[in-house]
Amino acid sequence: MNRSTASTFAIASLALAMGCTSSASMGAPDLADPPPDMADPGYPEGPYGTTVGSTIANYTFQGYFAPTDTSGLSRDKAVGEVTLDMLRKSGQKVAMIQLAAFW
Image 1: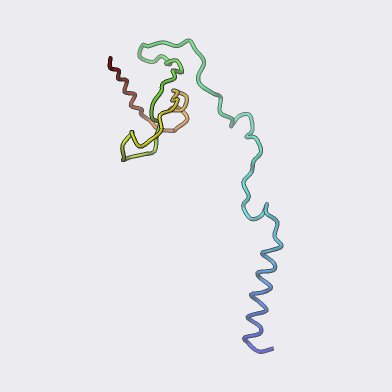
Image 2: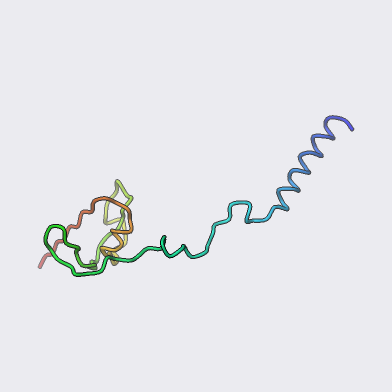
């Protein structure tokens, strides 16, 4: 067997072996439910308040939600429902909530 034939055989064998590998060993995502201690507990329960150290209620607003955007205009986004729970789940340490009205 010459060198060219041997390398072609090796490449073909490798490709065949990779094609026969199960998807579980190829890094397929685990779609099982997380264990109870890792599941999101949801928005904190009340009592709610407005003083320092209190938990604010899970208010819902109509607006723009883009926790990872660092540039651009808000008018380029679709207006939708935004909740304080969405802000909590975003992982950001601070949030700017700007309310405005005109009449």
